[in-house]
Length: 491
Image: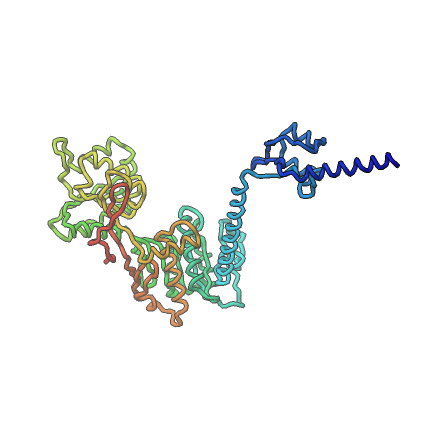
């Protein structure tokens, strides 16, 4: 009995000692970094069992600790091992950000669901389209009629793939926005991808099966030529993004900024400012002929004005020696004269590469853009061109949308990124098309004097579109200012 009491007392004493040790506040902490490795900051003073010896000997992997069945941090009664993360606040911040992103995703999904209710044709299944095995290219389908719903269709021709797909997909987003804000359950947008060509037989079937009430697009002249006869037959209005104003007629409106409109803006501005001696440098192609022809017509209205044109082919641009000689003769460069005297205005038209090739050479031949006014087309609205020193103080035309400041926030909140003229014009085209369909009479007279809510474009019933064109001047470091006397609607 005595020995039993001693044994019992020893057990009680041991328990008391363990309880006293457990009440201490200087707990040893096991620090685990976010790289899944940790080192002890203090040696473990108690509970020197086999596990703790192992921890003392080696670094602890978080992954190993969590996977070890013998160690369950949530269930352990040992208060001496505490898991602490160095980047706890950072980790908490990430969790918050994740929650925010999840909320944004939910919001975006809800917007998309609302768009679907507006009958946006965002998928092939919603379009009720069946792939034709005889047509191998993307987005080429035959349409199956759905007789249960009598939709008022807006047929949209855009390059959703291919060379101009960046423009086409941006316009598509803007059309979706217009439908979401102004459409109804009876109006449907139907997109047709023109990125890989247009089959006339398929276009014919689309018009026959869909019976479109309004057409938006296409983006290029070539596709417009194929679509136009079908629309003309049924007097269907077309709002095209092509900049070929020769295609305009009573049922076709061009939202593009044509070469003729561009040079008219800057040449008229220069004439109004008193410039009279014009040099024209343009590519040796149809575009160059159009640019120079319209410029010469404007310049020649006053017989006292002077003009001379130079057309450059790709071969001319690639042969540097001949290019220098050609420009030197055209400019009548003289080493004895410090300033250029032949022209007081030079128009450079063409693609970016031509402009950046020619502009520094003009400066080399004493054509100082501060004294000889350099004119350009909309192509000048490019960061490389705007930051080219030899083009400082030059002029070029832009269409500046009437309500761009408000629309850009709307666009950014919905799609992210920046809007541009095509996104603005696409939104307006959608709004105009929707309002046209809602009009019970549905005749072309409805489009007379209609104004685009974002761009400020004004339509008339003959196919003409007035555009708010402004002439911009390139300043130091690529900044722009507008020539207020020349900034007005094109005439």
